[in-house]
Amino acid sequence: MFISIFKDSLLQVTSSFKLNEFFCKCPDFVKTSHLLDFRLITAVQAVRDYYQMPVYITSSYRTLFCNAKSGGAHNSYHLTGRALDFSCPNINSRIKDDISAKGKLYSSLRSIGINGFGFSDSFIHFDVRTAGSIIDPVFSLGYDIWYYK
Image 1 (spheres, rainbow, N blue to C red):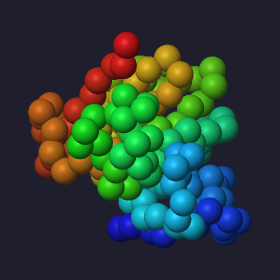
Image 2: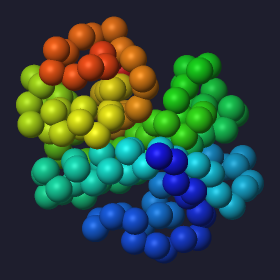
Image 3: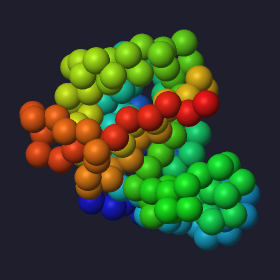
Image 4: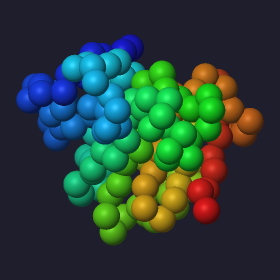
C-alpha cells in the first residue's frame, strides 16, 4: 500500500494532487524520495471531493529531527510514512464536526483505512494505525481521535 514519493515528480497521482505535493517538508531531509501509505493520498482526495474545497498538505513523512521540532510523538506515524497533516482553510471545523459525529465523511475515511484523527485550529492529522481505543461496531478496527491544544 506504500507509494514512492519523489521530490520533483509532477505525476498526477489523483484528480486533484500531484505526487510532489506529498513530499517531505523537513529541511534536513536530503533524499530524493520516501515512502507514503497510499491510503493517506486517497483520504485527502476524499476530503477534497466531499467538500469541493482545496486541501493543502502540510506534513507527511518526517525525519526524527523534524518530528521532534514539531512536537511529534517519539513513535509518530509520520516517521514511517503512515500519517499526514493537511489544512482546508475555512472548513477545518466542518471536517472535525463530521468525523466527531461519525458522518458520511467519517465512514468514507474509515473504509479507506484511516483510524487516527487529530484536530487543531490550523491542521488536521490522519494516520493509518492498525488499532485504536475507541470501538465502532461498524468497523473491525478501533480508532482514535484527539484534539491538539
